[in-house]
Length: 325
Image (cartoon, rainbow, N blue to C red; front, side):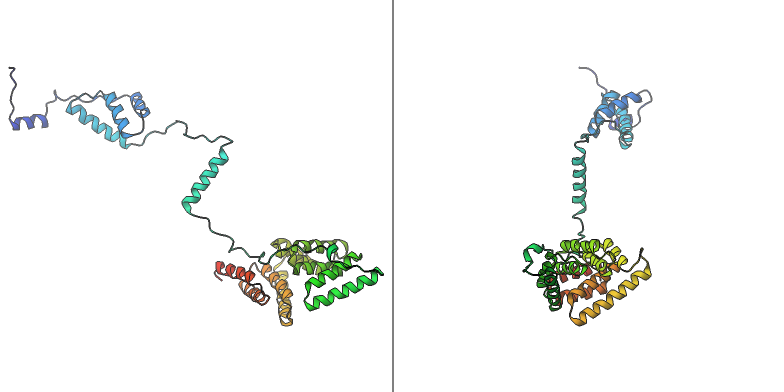
């Protein structure tokens, strides 16, 4: 039976804890190409440890294992060099829009739904927009002298305006137009009636025809054009029309202040006389010139309520609430 030396517990601990210099073999550090090979083995700690073990040739030995462990701890804690591998998904010209759309959708999902801008924008489109019947359909042309019949139609239309009967006024102005009368009285009357019947697109055509054919310098035509444009949400164009009506070639603070004062005075006069349609127009003009002044908005809400336009009034209340006014 082969002889095996027996060590006491104290001797065993001393031998392990304090080995001689001849018993300790220092590990040889790997070369740079070895670390490159290790990095190519993968980025997970387990793969790097296995690769390092293979490079170092760890088979056993407490001293070599301890040195390798220390080398691994220091190297694994350091950041890995930048990889040059191509990305998993390459964006081609055809796929780039889809990639960008997916990224945008992901960002939106992370940040939540976008804030609504509907309530913070001035609700110029608060009133419904209809398409009025054509003048060919509504005109009633009788036999007789056209000039006389046209005069009668205009007089009938003006009486209907005083009564507040915009439908009758529109039909009468259509009759005058069909009789061949295309003066500013008829065309502007058509534009006002169309605006009152919630057809601003047709009203804009009528007023532009008036400006082109009969009233190129008519102040009322440009004022009405601005009132129509503001209902279409074309604020800058509306302001330019009002400036041109005032005879100005450019805006100034004095000009804007004067226009606001004139619109406010006209609105108060219209309210006292019960002309809610004109009061509505004048208040919208002031709101556009003041970029949404809350006091003018509240006055418009009152007019809308009196005129039975509850839905439109609620739109303006929501706008003021979103502004914190």
